[in-house]
Image (cartoon, rainbow, N blue to C red; front, side):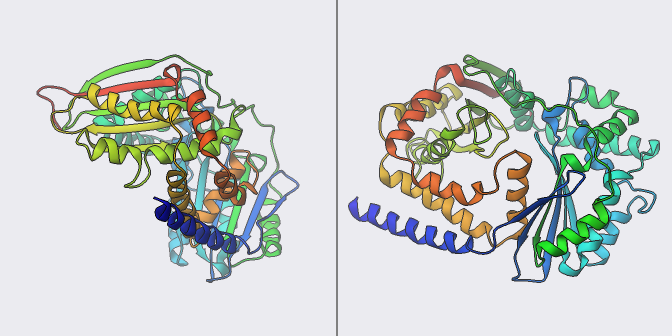
Length: 446
């Protein structure tokens, strides 16, 4: 074991050295225009390409009851044209000059991305500034796009037992947090959504003082500042609504739900309410919680893989914990029971390993293994300018300092086995646990 631990330490040391070298280039530059638009620039001159992202601090967590899904619908409408760039021309122009574009809506933000050759920076910013303030709201286009979103919901959620179960699980696991509603929206809300609703949402949130422009690639901060001032500088700011704090009850109480849906396999969903680095309280515990999640389920040597999957109790297990979330989040554990194993048996086997973290110290070897994996992911992400921009945008949109990107590995490396056991004792409690049993409905099927 000493040889294995020594080897793990060598690997982590090498990876940390590589990560430090990768981060030794120019620090991201950050400045704010007079209208409140925050601009972040990360130089990367390895290739003559850039990525531009515009992040709006609004997502499904900001939607009131009755208007769920409106942020995602607006994302679709952002491609439906302005007076200067008619419907369909935005993506055609980007592609014509060798670029690509995309967009994404989450609980906490909506962002729009373009990948371009470096000399098209002006084009990218002109297109984004135009639709930030001059978006057209055509009734026919809205009706057509709303049908697209509703069909997307049918295909991805309503007709998918696992996705539908996770939607119900999320609603149960967050009894008071604003992120309990689905990002795509409840169907009943989509059915009553109006063009006026979406236009009002756009005018309320899509303003420069609620946006972050991130540019990464073969540019300089001076170049970006000049172009940002040219295209965004004259857009006026507007008063913003107050955003809800993403905060959950400290101990909501143990919750359980059983669903019987058509499908092929049963599934188990477990979730513990946890803080993140963006939480109001408990944010200092996020690094230890991230390592705790990795000790449980990260790689073929993780506890759940070795002691539950390979012992024939589960066909597979997945986990998730987002330490960079804007507020309180979940540690999720989903699993499919092995043949002749019940959902209750699988729940007991997984929770046995969870409770063991409260009683036994994780070994230094386990922690170093997880740290090596996280560090390698960080190293590889530095090769992709999309990933670099995405991290900067997430940090800024979640109200986290940009310096956290270089501080995460250091903080993770300082976590001790005793700290990991301490957070397990405080957070891995039945009062924070949600369970959903997805059973296969007899006679059902996909």
